[in-house]
Structure formats: structure tokens, C-alpha cells
Length: 173
Image (cartoon, rainbow, N blue to C red; front, side, top):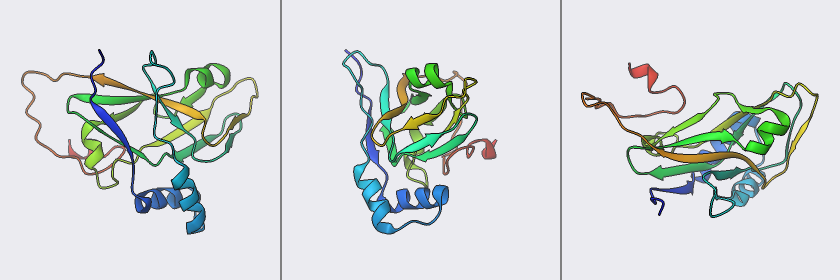
């Protein structure tokens, strides 16, 4: 039986609105509320699926060679010594060469307590060399996250606590 080690949550409305306006510019608060209220928590498609599908908050089009940034409105609480690894949905990668700009998104267990509430963003590029435009409809899966257990070295003595998002841990080295 699989270990139950995590739970997805929405970030607060305040945090989502901040991420949304930073990404797309000013918008009506009512419109941001409508988007926030429609956010679906990640789910597995079948009992045999390893990946939890992340869903589009709104319709977006990604032209060949173009990049979009998606504030998902999602955060995840997980046990220590686990990580959530995020990848494009397999079919989108196969059909459109859709790629995460950081190749694999790594969500550490302590990211949940970060000053941005652990808000997971995805930056996607349509790397199609066949001229295919990708239409991503609100509510459809675009990324999948897989939980993986990890170990550390016997002489590891790190005591530093996280407070930030992407790249924040390298600033402390």
C-alpha cells in the first residue's frame, strides 16, 4: 500500500491575488476571486496513476516557442524526507514538446512554510518544432506532480530554515 504523506491545499486568496497580479498585471478583484474559487486541487486520474494532475486556472494559449507562467494557487504539506517532483503531462510533452522551464520542478517539504505560503508556480514553454499551438482550457490538466522519498548523507548537519521561493536556498550557501 502506498504511503500517505502529503495533502494539497489552496494558498490564501491574498497570496493568490498577489501571484496573479504580479504575473498578469492588475485585474478586477471579483475576477481574481472567480478564478480562485474555481481552482481544483491536484488529483490522480486513476488508482494506478503515480502523478497528481495540476489543472489550469484559466484558458491560455501557448504559441510555438512561447512561454507562459501559471500561478496554480496550490501549495502542498508533506512529511519531511519527501519531495514533490513536477513534470509536464506526458501527452502534452509528446504532442507539443511542452516543457517546464526548470526541466523538473522540485517542491521541498519546507516550501509549505515559506513566506509565499509555498505557492506553486509553473513556467511552461511550447517547444514545438512542428508549429503546433497549444490550447489549454481552464480545468484541464497541464502538469503532474509525483511524490518521491529521499535520503541524506550520514554527515549532513544543515540547520538553515527556508524563507523564500525559487532559488532562495542557494542564497544561503
